[in-house]
Amino acid sequence: MSKLFAVIGNPIEQSRSPELHHAFAEKTGVDLEYVRRLAPLDGFEASVRDFFAHQGTGMNVTVPFKEQAFALCDQLTERASIAGAVNTLWMTDGKLYGDNTDGQGLVDAIQTLNWPLDHSQILIIGAGGATRGVIYPLVKAGVHKLVIANRTLARAEQLIAALKHTVPEAQLQACSLDELSGDFDIAINATSASLSGAPLNLPESLHFDHAYEMAYGKASSFLDQAAKRGVPVSDGFGMLAGQAIEAFYIWNGIKPDLKDFI
Ligand code: NDP
Image (cartoon, rainbow, N blue to C red):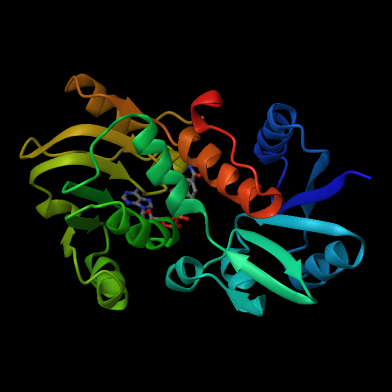
């Protein structure tokens, strides 16, 4: 019998996870079925319990349930615990386990592009859930200095105050979007501006050698401006595929090669 997996969220039709996991299965010979699961906004826990009670093997969790998934788990990996959010669930000996593979997905995507991370200086614009999830994996991949710029400065400051003890080897700085300047190896857009179509204006005093947009499948004023500056750019599909590969590896013990899927 094939193993059953699902991605749970609300809404869920837009999710590309089934397509990715079926492609990984075809490449690796794993026999699986991977479905979309719409949970009511007030029914996340019941839907997860029902899935695992009916032979489900593993679940991915997407918007808006990652923090609820974190709260529901009996056991967390270190990176999920630091991220405060869970995107990968599985059950072992009656206990619900949770991991967060988003950050490693970003690291793998950037490394697959051959962009520099070791000893690098990185700018992340945005201080929401996605930024929280990537700080620890980026520093563990060798990032030396991380500046987090956010429209609401206090949110970037709070994030750094909460996480700095987990990455003592790195230099973390907060700044507001208005103060944005300096030289970076990579600038990462982790705002949801592209999802709403809002422009993000990058000042002339800001310089970077590569530009990574976490959103995918959307117009991005961040990437448009970066492309005009002539630097290499990427949207977030590689990060999505990277987090999916990490989840596939946790569940199936086989790691597909990210290069084959982006
Ligand atoms: P959150 O809602 O948690 O955070 C949104 C962030 O965007 C906040 O810092 C907010 O600033 C900022 N923001 C929103 N609108 C604007 C604007 N018009 N101008 C400037 N800043 C703005 O979102 P997430 O952290 O969960 O997601 C962020 C992005 O990352 C999304 O595009 C999402 O799709 C993408 N993502 C991609 C993944 C992938 O696999 N590729 C995985 C996870 C996320 P403020 O604090 O001031 O409100």
